[in-house]
Length: 512
RNA sequence: GCCGCCAUCGUCUAGUGGUUAGGACACGAGGUUCUCAUCCUCGUAACGGGGGUUCGAUUCCCCCUGGCGGUACCA
Image 1 (cartoon, rainbow, N blue to C red):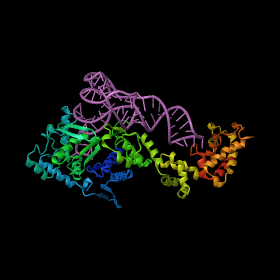
Image 2: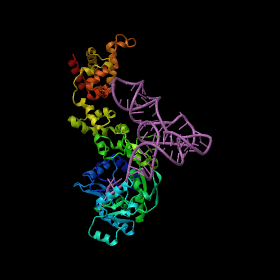
Image 3: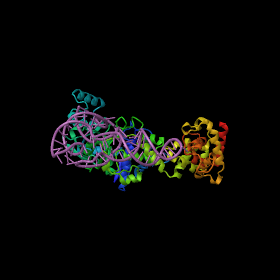
């Protein structure tokens, strides 16, 4: 199956667009088909610098590489197009659209109109006064406007020869009912009386979406047009165009819109729904794709975690929702955590290394870095949290009694010297080559008992021993300087015997 | 206004002519734990309203309401 994603470069690609691209990509891939990226830059006014680059970059980030169409840029910034049905940038196809518009003119499916903006405004004003709040250029007004339907043929020729500006409009037939099948919604119906004679070719020679889209989808042999629901009302225009050209229309699927929390359509004009924002915040493409897929589609089972590959396998239009979905990122954050923890440790370590090195240069060639990364993988949601969570490995923390003496753990300042001496004595007894999490844990536990108990182990009074929290909280707090961090044992192991004792001794001195 | 689409927990959603209406996120309470996070257990929470059809409607039909979209020489 050949599908396509045809954004207009009017701004940064937003998440709704990314989801539409995803669905198109999925459908193409699962049938071994082709995913086409076409750029619809027919509105010169609204084109935004850098938007095309942003679209390509974002799709690449998400793993949705197009097979055909605009696939990238050369080193000097020129677009690279692939496929034999190009060009895939509509502004390079102007001649084509004009030719097809002419065909429509000749076959009587379209007509030229010379109305000026002022005339159209006046017409709308009159209509509104007559009680028509949303005037259309349709049957009812068509006959009193200045177009090739009402004007003398010679006069039309004269005006065109004199290069008077004009548009080409679609001639919508009277009292027709269009019945179409939408792959998501089923049967949809429109009456031609509600469709206006839409402009196909603007006076600047550029086509409108309606013309360009239909011509391109046909010429590019697109099998399925999957687009946002906002296009549903103009479906009859497109159907009419296919009919006028004598072409078989593709299948259509109108996906429900993504809504903002207020309930309105999520758009790039309002709010920060641009995909780039999420990329900058550090979201993983896997999380974003997974989240977007689930917004409007459900897999049928209870599994919620899907990779792109898995999505290609399970995605189906039948399970796409009809109603709009609120773009609420709470679940995205959860998904982000899930995917963060799925990253293989080595890969995770190398991902955060440059981030940490930026703040702590020593991390760049730290041979022990992977061990440190392992400590925080299930604690971070974003890579940029790593430096803070590993700070104590690169910068000895300052001893802070307020932090170390924790009330909740029954650690009082007067108890601290005893606790620290105990820690230092016990840990010193561990041979360096035995310095492992498990050994440290065992030694502390047993020497705690040995230190405080007299008599045999069976008869000692355990109440005279320190609680685990009474020595582990201070140990962890001294080693990390943080109120929360990975566990005391694991940090001690990675820090090494020497450094651990050094920090404990320093703390003892400061507190004393 | 008109045209169109849609309607299950706060959110994403499953589901059925007879169900204790299921799951996930979030939230709350426990548990594990030296802290945090993870993890585990439990819990709160929904079929918009009115008519039909039917022995029985959340489910099928109609109306209403509500939400969204469209109504440009924008896409």
